[in-house]
Image (cartoon, rainbow, N blue to C red; front, top):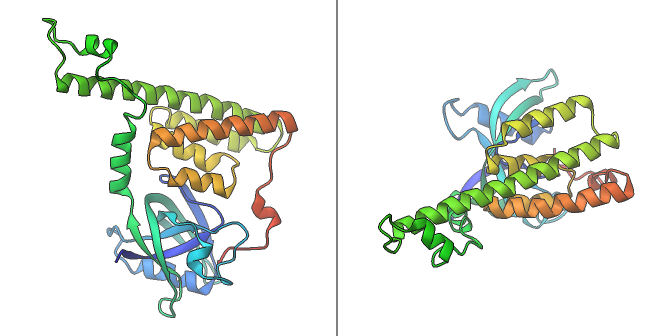
Length: 280
């Protein structure tokens, strides 16, 4: 059995480290907020899981487990402001990712719950293995020369590990720099088409500068900010390694830049043309 957590389905994924403000007005999700407020502030349990609804599916009309994507992200409660109508304005921040194994529907509590398994261990293992993806360092002449001892003796395993780690860091940095450049061009193109306000552009620029030296944070910022489909965003959320996530973002940003330049228009979110799907 996995751990049971409250669920809050939305039309788009939440990403780690990203801020998510919500207006909670439906009675069962008011109950969710009240349940979280009953948890001590210092507790790490003041959270719920955000899972994206599959495009064109409505949670209430079919089996919830089929209507939701299987990879979600925790939303940690940061601020709650009660409203005169009994609802709440809340601010949350994305936390750990999880895999949704099953959805529990009941009368008490009235909101959805999910049986989940946490992806932190899997993510760490994938990240460690992914750092060496495509890096043929041990055994190559250049790496052997770089790792050789001063007396010319063959490199030891420890030195080779250090070389692999150094090359991995450098290549990840180059990949992140490429994504940052593509995303900057993308934001400029969107701004030129009048799809963003000056305030939004300034905020994106500040955020981009803040995560410039953190490839993982950069990858999540791009995933949450680019005008991508739910399917594209979900694919980025499901990717466990920063390296592969950045590689996917490179392809997606190049695709989006081509479309922006050739069509001269910003794609409208698909949700605009769909029937309302949110359960709140």
